[in-house]
Length: 246
Image 1: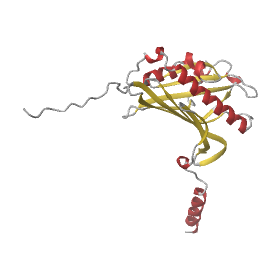
Image 2 (image 1 turned 30 degrees about the horizontal axis):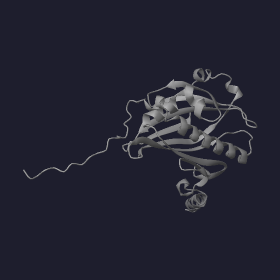
Image 3 (image 1 turned 135 degrees about the horizontal axis):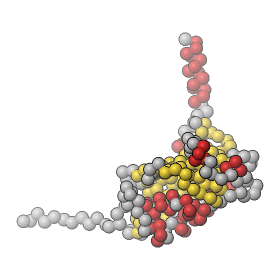
Image 4 (image 1 turned 90 degrees about the horizontal axis):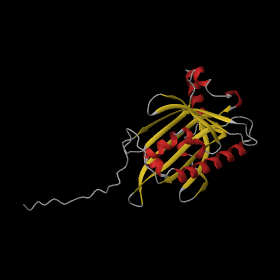
């Protein structure tokens, strides 16, 4: 009985230090009428991690859902919008919705060069929003990893969580648009001071979202379609009153 009581006491004591991430308010770092970046303490396994922050970036863009997906998954285009991105390559395609890829991040003083080795999968919800889950690719075999040149020269970024949500909308009443939300917790690792790492990350995601807003509306992306993705209709629904006088 004493052991049971002790276990209950330990559990209650532990819960005093548990934090519900959804209850922690976001602090705005920078925003304007088209995009915003905010942050809050990172919650890892129910507890605040004092070394990391969770970041939320949003933007409104003239684009279709398919246009965004094609834009995001075009590895040859990654370095044009993702700040500090260098080489980016697809390593394995499991299905239309799921793949593994890597992105090398160029060296910026005083940071070492980094690499992201990732899995990505997406799905569409009943409300037509599209969600993309990004995780560390931890189950890749050595043969695939050996295709990454000079891998030992890069420090691998740790992804705790990374999630895109793309919500379709009509802009100005008729033009197709999307609201982009990207929430993530990453650990760049290394010996970079926290204040400097946070500054670089916040500044980089702001510029990245700005690049997406500027490049995504281009016609070459907006002419794309993706099998299985339903777009929000731009044709207004007209309700007609039936004639019951006959």
